Amino acid sequence: MSKKDTLPGFHLLAKPTGALCNLGCKYCFFLSKKNLYPGSSFRMSDELLETYIRQYIEAQKIPQATIAWQGGEPTLMGLDFFRRSIQYEQKYRRPKMTIQNTMQTNGTLLDDEWCEFFHENNFLIGLSLDGPRELHDAYRVDKAGKPTFDRVMKAARLLHKHKVEYNILTTVHTANADYPLEVYRFLRDEVKTNFIQFIPIVERDNDTGFQEGDTVTDRSVKADQYGRFLISIFDEWVRKDVGKTFVQIFDVALAAWSGVPPGICAFSPTCGTAMAMEHNGDMYSCDHFVEPRHLLGNIYEKEMSRLAGSRKQRDFGRDKFDTLPAYCRRCEVLFVCNGECPKNRFIKTPEDETGLNYLCVGYRVFFRHIDGAMRFMAHELRQGRAPANIMNYMKNIKDGQTIHMAAKPGRNDPCPCGSGLKYKKCHGQAG
Ligand code: SF4
Ligand code: SF4
Image 1 (spheres, rainbow, N blue to C red):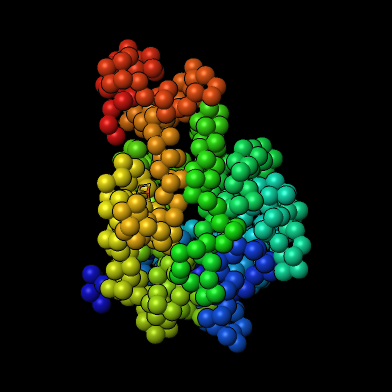
Image 2 (cartoon, helix red, strand yellow; image 1 turned 90 degrees about the horizontal axis):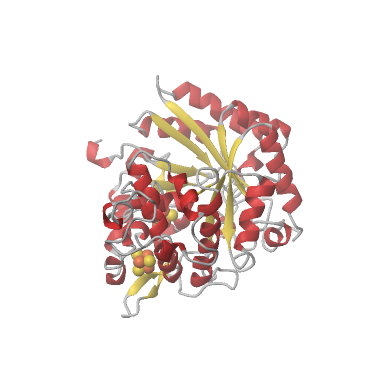
């Protein structure tokens, strides 16, 4: 195997139950993937489990590996399956290698035993929760159409009780997008989580379940609505919660304004280092492209490292940059947006070029809005100070005045942070 055919490290989302789930969330993009495997039991065999763990650990040329479980609903495999996965990790782990285990779950099957296991093995859990009861239950229902809020809240309490590290994954859709502060305050004050990821629901309206067509379902968030959602939460966060509550897209933005890679594929110039593996060992280019045309192969037939480093996969990752429309290439917030995820690029630019991101309007307005605050925080970081200092600065900003205006005085004006320097020499410096 030549070196150029492998990646030094990559992420893989393993789906031990394929698309099987005990819930029937109305917007789920993955439930329809069961059609790819008619007649399957949708259970990863013990033999494949060991093969996966061995190949994945061997493929990492760096001393870290992340074993990431996702679904469908991975807890349907039962706890013993994951106990065995830990045993295989110990068997194949190289000396000095650190292994992180993560799991994305709907939480409804968790109990004390699961949470003790997570705690003992340092799992990082992603728990899906869409906000307060009515907003969560709008789409997150079980197979019988029954609400799931109480079951998920019980899971959050169990994770707290057992000191399991977890973050909340909140999808943003028609039902909750107009209630940003209700959602955010609920997660911060009632769930008491410190880590939040917002995922916009952009659900294509077609019968295939693939990323095809240019219409979206009524459940999908609108682009401008998503922008307003993020702005409302940012305006509260930047006054009260910097350094206390971590919101993934705000971290991504601060990284970009600080000139640091975002660490999130959707906002990186290229992608292709985060693949997905089905319950039978089939590997696909990405979790959002589990479709026949993006099948890389099966790890029984070809080593995972070869599939991850294949020409097909490298092209997939480079296409994210190569297919950017001219409209994006000259966009003032390209450095942070990077056209976001290709799965959402299906509308036309004002010049009629294809491949613009459906959420573009929202991202533009959001990233412009946070420019002043991000410059401030990035400057603090460069000076070795805490970005949270912005909260003091924000005390001088009147209610209703936008951060963008307040944080952007003229270049030769005194910097509002009180340093005595001109703005251009202080917080107005280019990133
Ligand atoms: S297609 Fe989107 S989600 Fe998939 S790897 Fe690329 S940026 Fe990430
Ligand atoms: S904001 Fe719109 S135009 Fe700018 S990079 Fe993002 S998707 Fe492209």
